[in-house]
Image (tube, rainbow, N blue to C red):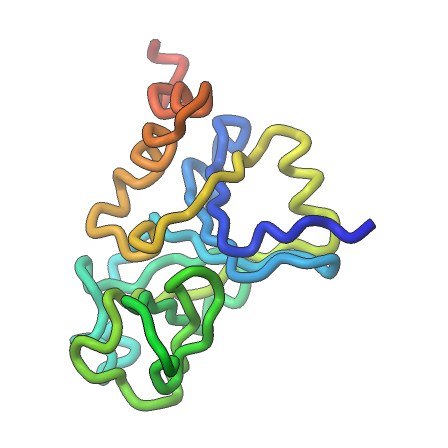
Amino acid sequence: MEPVSMRGSLLVATPAIDDGPFRRSVVFLLDHDEEGALGVIVNRPLDSGVEEVLPEWGGAVDAPGCLFDGGPVAMDSALAVGVVDGFDVPPQGWRHMSGHIGLVDLDGPVPAHGVLRGLRVFAGYAGWSAGQLEEEIDEGAWLVVEARDHDVVSPCPDLLWAQVLRRQRDELRLWATFPDDPTLN
C-alpha cells in the first residue's frame, strides 16, 4: 500500500528531539512519496545575509533578509522557496510544490518586485529515506500539521514553533507551553 503523501504539511518537532538541528524545528515538506521525504527547516535563521552568498537575490527575500538553515543535508547548496498570491500562468522560474508555495530557480532571473508574496533562501535541506520519516512520526518525534502559506516566510521565525502549535484545535496546542528546559521547571 502506497503511503499517503504529507507533501505540503509541516513537521513540528516534539520534545522527544531534544538536541541537534531539529530541536524545536518546523519543517515544510516539499516532497514526500514511497522513496522518502524532503523538506526545509523554516524557523532557523542564520547569521549570514543572502546578499553575502547570492548578491543579486539579497533584495528579493523577506525579512529577516538572511539565509536559513534548511537542514543538515547539502549545507553547501542553496534552495529557494517562494509564495505567490495566485496565478493563471506560474511565474518564470517558480515550480509549484503545494498551495501557493513553490521552489524558485536561483539560476534564473530574480523575480520582479510583486511577483512573489514572499521568498526565503535555505542553505541545505532535510531528507529522509523510504519509511524513515514515518518511523520517526510513529516514535513521537514529529507532529504533522497543516501548513499555511505564510509559515514558510514568517517574519518571526523564532516564534514559529510555538505559534504553529498554539493554533491547533486539539491537545496538540498544549505542546506550545512545553518549557524550553524542563529541568528548570
